[in-house]
Length: 314
Image 1 (cartoon, rainbow, N blue to C red):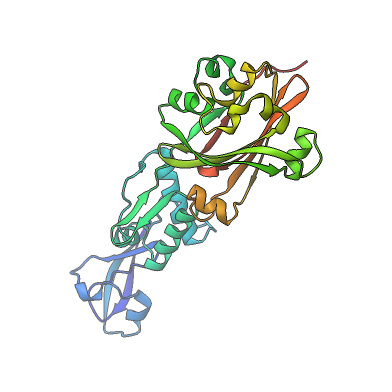
Image 2 (spheres, one colour; image 1 turned 90 degrees about the vertical axis):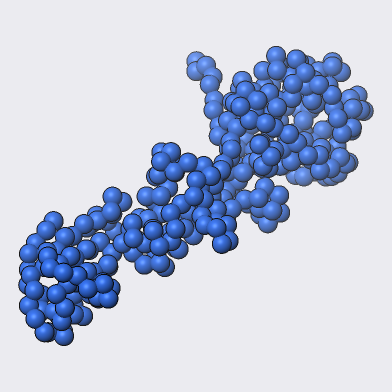
């Protein structure tokens, strides 16, 4: 929108940089006056100049947009990241460039970047700038990932699924121990609370970044039948293959998921940005009607994708 109007001004040029409004004079411009607002200059009352006023709003804003300015800016940058206009690893414009782009103060830009960091979308390197965060994620195909053809062929579930999506996967063994069963694990194994069970704790990695903490609990009578589960390396196909080798055919898997905020150790272990949630997954594996394993996995929320395909029951 453009309008011509008269402003009483001490100089023949006025430019206002307040958010959402740009004012440019039709006559010569004095650089030292670029930050003065029209209301301030008008009070000086020296001469009368005709100026053209152009009111405009960046693409993310509008005259009726009630969102705070920092939210409008962060939402616009987030949209650019999600559509691929800003790619993973790409550097964002400088603070000054963002101020000019969004016609706002430095404080508003900094608050917008704080929101993006809390959302896990941006990382800032001291003295260098802000960059779009790289977020490798491996989609968990809920039913297909447990196909017997994968682990009986000697490939662990995680490795096979990640490689099929072009990622590299690995794991770090954190603990092998006999421990009292937590209440929720004991309930799913069908044993009294704090019954001794065997646990294998691992941290799994996707493209060298931690994506989940996985703790598998086994009844001790199963461990006596499958002693290799006590070892660091369970061999080709992992624990599932060894359980079936012992004569326990796996017949059913139940998964329960819930999203929540992480605790302190989870934030550190998974290298989670501020404000990033986790997904807690409880998996119970059965041989016939008997549970043989309960796994608790804590997945980094910004790296987790889930896909399920199944027939519709009658």
